[in-house]
Amino acid sequence: MNRRRTLLLVIVGLGLASGVFLFWPEHPHQPVVALKMVRRAVEQGKPVVFFRVETADNRRIQITEVAKIIEDPPTRSVEYAVSGVPPKPAPNFWAPSQTSPIMSLRSGRSEFGVVVPTNASIWRVQVTVCLDLPIWERLSAMPSTWSYMRKSGIAFPRTETAAWNAFYNNHPQELYSDPITNGVAIEVTK
Image (cartoon, rainbow, N blue to C red; front, top):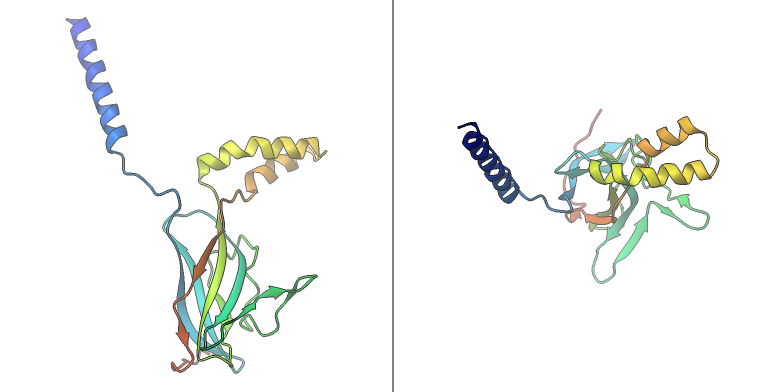
């Protein structure tokens, strides 16, 4: 009797495990990432539009590049937030109340403000972002990072902290805002 019960429990357990495996919802390899316009304002007499990068999951985001694309026909021009050799920030690119979110892990999900280009009636913002790898992929990448740092002569506690806090990114993604027209009324924030 015990043998039959054990065999039945094993068969039911295998059936449940295979059912969970077969019918587990699939997650896309690349999560959905979007650039959303949050609000418009005037800061120190300059019209500003604020944006935020949003994702479906809670992975860390690193913004690597931001550009204003002016789409007035017949020409199209691009103004990058950082340009030149050596790289220098573009003047009057960020809102007066903001600092650059580029390469900052703390501000990847925060809203950032861009000064409205005065020479364009239609424009949009392009943002290049990298998402941190999912936790299991990060954990599998940590030993090689730790090993490389140890071979470089970095002390043990620093290698552990650096390997844990490192940003293990996958392929960068370019995001575009919806077209923005300068004819829309801007609210004044105080």
